[in-house]
Image 1 (cartoon, rainbow, N blue to C red):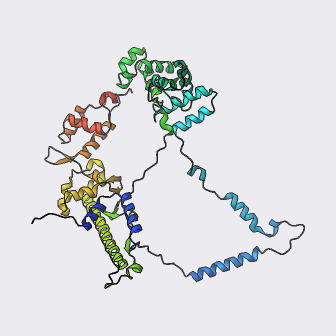
Image 2: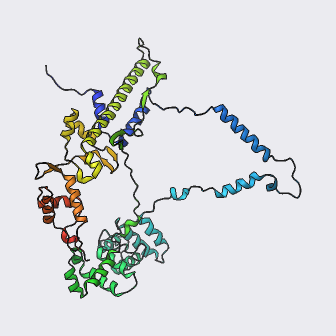
Image 3: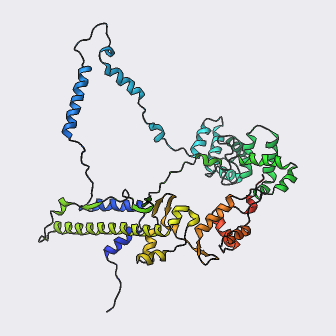
Length: 472
């Protein structure tokens, strides 16, 4: 004898639906509709606003009135044309030309990849068949940014299997031909080579010459923003160096990305947050989960005392349909309860943005709703909320906290917002260091160490103060 916890099929199904995202839920609902004859979508039939018979009469009268004006005679006069008698033909022809049809070619056009784009240019080039074979191997070795993903020596070694008399100079010559293809800077060996190719394509000037020297010899100094050393190495003034750096920044470091047309994936919100009469309201998105019901036609065939195989099968389908509808209802109810609890705690975020985000953990919501933390974790994963400030995942509202001098707490999201605001308003030639940002936040009552500032700054992909320094 012993005791153990067993999860019923109903509970397993409820947990499964609870953790599904919007797209996965729609697929699960469709699978249930396809496999269960007792389930159907509850489609609301809209009632007509007017009597159909009246609309039919109106249409008939309109047709009769039009026919009296455009009635076609049995014979036309010899000196008359068709348009003189039947005006509808001319009007229809003019309307046909004025109608703006959708551009089906642009809607269904094939996405051209970087490889296809370069191969099309290769077909129009004057290269021999031997050089085209080398060019195809080089194009196949390019990555998404347009750089040669392997060394030119490796390309040469790979081609030796098919071309025993191949020389390395031939591969270099073909590479230079491909580098003249569009976009400029393609098939570069590294960043310096890519920027140099683009500079050489520009009209020759003093700035381009200096920029070429800077890229070939002192690109590392430019990356670390060491302007004083650059002025000394290049022998230019501060104004001249600013012009050269501005020219380099106008170049494209990833020319291959121009042709990378990625498929857009849209986020469908699960709930909508709106403000009505100074009260924040949370509503479920009715479009993501259709209303389901039991099919009355098939359920009427079930007989209580019948134990046939068909009757037992229909009873099973009916019970499963009831469980599925109940689980779906429970999911939506739990989702709405969690969303309302989050909004009640984060009203200041809706009013003032990230800087007003309060620290909150899963336990806070779980204790308020009397649910387990694992349930709250399932509800807040891959669920999205549409707010006036944008669309956010439920998980976004949960963050750690930092103590303040007044004895309160400040969320990590608010601290990141403060850091971003301070860096956005700093002087370009005197950027704020992590230590300075830490002191400024301490003046606001937020106790945070310099190392924590550096960690938050790196999570937001913000460079260090040395790399952010710019010339005025």
